[in-house]
Length: 199
Length: 89
Image (cartoon, rainbow over all chains, first blue to last red):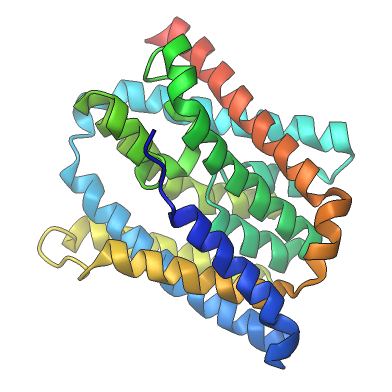
């Protein structure tokens, strides 16, 4: 199985930032400003890229299957948020916002940190990071049991980039197109749903 | 905080519409690489902002909770896909 090392580079960057924080001498509002600027530029680049690729991909031909996968992913993640809130006695809004990050940890972690504080931000970051890693590890074995299309819903927003490497290496072009369209649509919905959950 | 949230939302929608309308003739140069570099910078800034206090919390609850949430989200998404696929595909 071909695994990308990019998630590990991201994790290292996050750890380096955390460890260097006490030495940096930055006040917390200065680092939050840097974080907001970086997040805004990142969001713009990603959304522009998603928009331009949505046009290229032939979404019409795979619309129904993509729709089923997107609904499954959103409904499953929301159900996970509800279950988590009751099981661990977390706030409902925060749990939903964490779950509805759907694998996009670079967005969900900072968003929850600014809204709810450090520990919620850390749970948001790690749960979405683990979702990506688990999808990378579990996609192949699960697809052997359930077929190749349905496990795409596990990956959430990551199926248009990181986990696409695993999905693409093992399947036909139609599955790759479905995974990309699914990831692009989920990436579109994540900022909307997380913001709605937190309002 | 809410203002920051809405700002990010607006940035996303504007970027998406611009990409949809102009993406074919005006591609962002090296968008994938740029996105990757920005993701690294963003996570470094997030780490700076969080500080090292989460490390002490990580072993008292954050990691097990995060794993639980990740497993729940993956399992329930797969279950929903199975149910919806059976009934609507």
